[in-house]
Image (cartoon, rainbow, N blue to C red):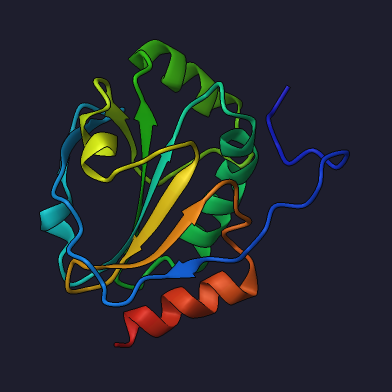
Length: 162
């Protein structure tokens, strides 16, 4: 049965915390589910949403479809999403993503030892960051979000045009 937003739970929020001044985003190099190495530094000049999550985390599971909808809305713009799974096996993550509806087409990364999340000072899951085109963290969100909400989409579009 596909995993989708459950209607018996409270709505996910769409509020993000703006960071000022914008700190430099920590570098990371992680492999995606296809075995391709992804470096954040290769995406300078694009707005990047970095999402730290795990399959066992209910709000992580609930927000995943909204990440895919946002990714599809912004296709063709300088925007990328990386969802970095925390300390779980390839098989578990691959199996979980196959249950999602819609299935993610953005890169799912494996932070197998939690090193990237430690560098980003992630204290709980999910935690997400929106990195501007200069490689600085513009927004942070701790807890589940409805990422395709018009307010979040507008924030990202504004960053794309900075």
